[in-house]
Image (cartoon, rainbow, N blue to C red; front, side, top):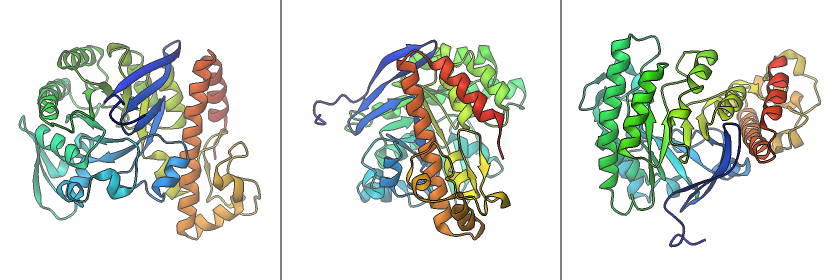
Length: 381
């Protein structure tokens, strides 16, 4: 399908099973099958992976980071070099987050006002002002396919006044983000923008946030402000109501989540899209995900284990190399160890997405989820 006949953005739900949904998000740079997991390419790279290898795992879309890319190499430089896709040789869709999470995580270097966030670069100490307008501009310069509104998130242990303040500010920033996106000319005609629901764990705040975002109007909606220390039980409690507050016909994106069992539980509650650094970060630190739970390949018991990381996995790592060899590489600090582990973990995540999509189509998602969770949580090393 040519770009001239491909819609700017279309989300079609093909099947549902309870609250779980599967479908296709169509954009000019390609289709995204949902539920979808987006590998994180913070600085224009999914660490330890070539872009073509990321695609071979089954990824339809990756995530880039506004905060990091605006600091290095610079959004204007990326634009001059032809945009992020050309720069990193990724031809499919890219979603860019707005920088809000980094603002929170680097709070000792930043000051938040209604205008935006004044922060000090963690690289060289230079001062920057990140506003909703600048966040959208940076994402436009990167030529992102899915732009995220600029938002403020706070940790769940802050007081109710600060929770309300952050939610209200995020709504105000959502209006400014939407307006700036609409001023984007040709880019706005081929890209999409998502709003981000905030409100920590408070159902009423979440509903107020969702209603305001719906009034503004976005192509998709994210559940933000989770996976920041509240724990799985609290997160799932929030997901029992938060996705239901968002439009049924729009994609729902749970930001920054998570472990394999988190993904299954979230799909059960109506989430369509995910991103997380966990599979790639864990790959670099020696943790491999398997159907029987995560294993620490550094453990001495794998030193002479000739079996693959996961006997049920057909990824290049599991098809070619033994646990003993990967154990040796990781223990020796060899770069290949990180590469093989990351390739497996990303393949595991994409296979999980594929299996969930198939289970929803077949009307057996609950049975699949219960079987997966029982096996995955039974053991881990």
